Image 1 (tube, one colour):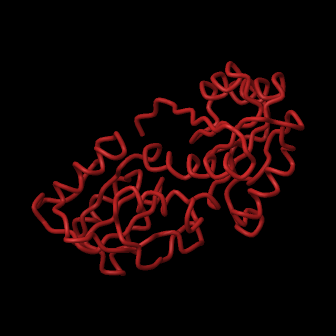
Image 2 (cartoon, rainbow, N blue to C red; image 1 turned 30 degrees about the vertical axis):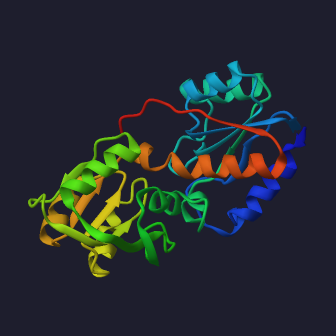
Length: 253
């Protein structure tokens, strides 16, 4: 059995969670049992995920998307009440790391995506999140737009939305940032990237991609952000000698 406070303290230090300005609190969001013997992870702390963890007897859930976001109502009613009620009723600790889990140089979503896809990271460029989150690198041997779309779908199990008129265009320099980083396309263009990969797309992104002569791939917000929290869970399981289970949730976005 491990003390939750010890696990959270380690995570906070590992991810430098208290030094990064974010849109929601990072670290322990809902306090539960003082000691745990297993770790569960998920992309988001949705009700279906909570129910699966509770059914398995879990007491520690670590997610990328937690609660208490800026702009949300600061009341526990309706669906939010039911989520928090589940946590409190079953002594479930909810821990969340948003930008710190995107940013980490090894366990982060962006680093993990690059590794999964075989991209050679060469540096970072700015992001509207306020950090240099966007990674840039090269694709060994180059790859066509069509082939990259197929590889993204194969690796992430999600069909990407692709904005590029020439499917045979060769991509050599690539920029990427998981989640809802579509507005960071401007930084990718300025960096001279042939393609930009993220999770989501906005209407304006279509026109910017076409006019900026860059291939754009929206590979799924949920799909691109499954990676970091799993890497963190596996790391913690080894560090604290606990079991780790990733709980996925059906999400088409």
